[in-house]
Amino acid sequence: MNVYRNSPKASPGRKSTTLQYLFELDSKNNNGVISSSPKTSKHSPSESENESILSTISHCSVIFTFTDSLESPSQQDFKRYKLIQLLSTVKSAKKPLPDQVLSALISMISANLFRPLPPSSNSAILTADLPDDEDLSYPLSPAWQHLQMVYDILLRLVLNVDPKILRSYIDESFITNLLYLFQSEDPRERESLKNAYHRIYSRFTFYRSFMRKSMNDVFLHYVFESEKHCGIGELLEIWGSIINGFTVPLKEEHKLFLMRVLVPLHKTKGMQVYHRQLSYCVNQFVQKEPMLGGIVIRGILRYWPITNCQKEFLLIGELEELVENIEPDHYRKLALPLCSQITRCLNSWNSQVAERALYIWNNEQFVKMASSAIKDVFPVIVEAMEKNLKWHWSKSVKQLTENVKGMLQEMDPNLYDKCLQEMVDKENLARQEEIKRKERWERIELEAAKNQFLQPQQFLCLSH
Image 1 (tube, one colour):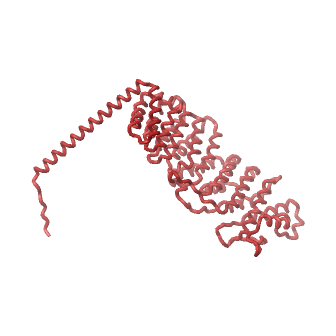
Image 2 (cartoon, rainbow, N blue to C red):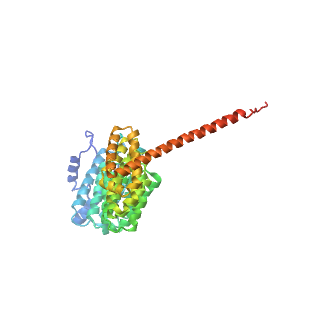
Image 3 (cartoon, rainbow, N blue to C red):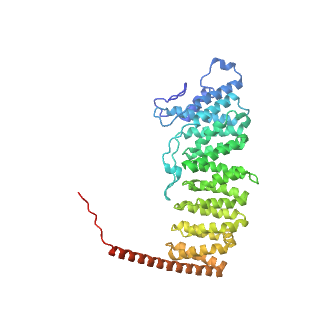
């Protein structure tokens, strides 16, 4: 076990050392200096202050697992107190911290944060492959009381210290290690990590390209290889802020990110965990350049789920938002594929998906898009409406279907009746074809029976 000298030991009659006791003890030891040598008095005030900070940092560098029964609770409390003291020092620093202190701080932060993460306790947490009525429950890190303050110290350093000075301490290796920590299952750690990583991206402009590429690599590995990662939502939140700052016209690099990373992120099993952030990122792109809406919609339709009703429900809502942002010039090209998918959804046996697909007809922009190619779209829609009214098990779905049918009939009564008649003719033709097919099979079976009756039986003799 890692311990350090001169640290307070729990008394026999005391179960654990309180923070009040630690504050009193520390105030008696010259504001954080546990032991002082005779030479201390010869040092200048700034040198003494630096030595005090370095001493505090050394105490904060001791690592506790919080799972080892041999670890002393008093030692853990003492480290927590020292972290509070160090955070206060970093916040209130009126002059730049010397290189020696900065180097020690970054080393302390690295020692506490960059650790091997435990294996996933539940694969469903990573893939969100859960029943509808079951909530995600994340295991919490027992070391969070220390990690939280370490993240706060890192964030304060990033905000207060000139990036050019920190560049030699916070390098690409440090950023890569931070990115790895997004796999932590503790949502509190991912939230603090997101804030620190985002601030580094904002202030360390010389690392932006590297950080974007690193995040892209995480997304691509998740989509095409593992489909296991806890921090996709937090990384997408960072990207949402990044996309918001893009200037128009968009660079080719950013368009490729949309097509090769964001659109494929719709196909994973765990999409519903991060769909809100993903939808925001995609809509930011389409708002900046509406002509990208067609690419996104076709991509979503290409990755449309077959058996996952939760994903279908979310994607219908995303398509509705995208229709409001695309250019009207693209309505005619997108009307048929988009309406075809929506009609398949309104015929779904899952009532939530069917109702959500029917509610999209309340959207004015969606109706305008359908009207732009009404002759192509109506035959598909009318058939789906009549199928719902005839076969669907849900009364609420049938009622909504009646409402949408009335609206469509008002749009073009003659065309609706024509499509209805074509559907009836098509059904009659299909019925006649089915009758003819059965008659052909009956003739074939009859001929086969005659041949079998007329053909002499052949016996195969086997010798033993």
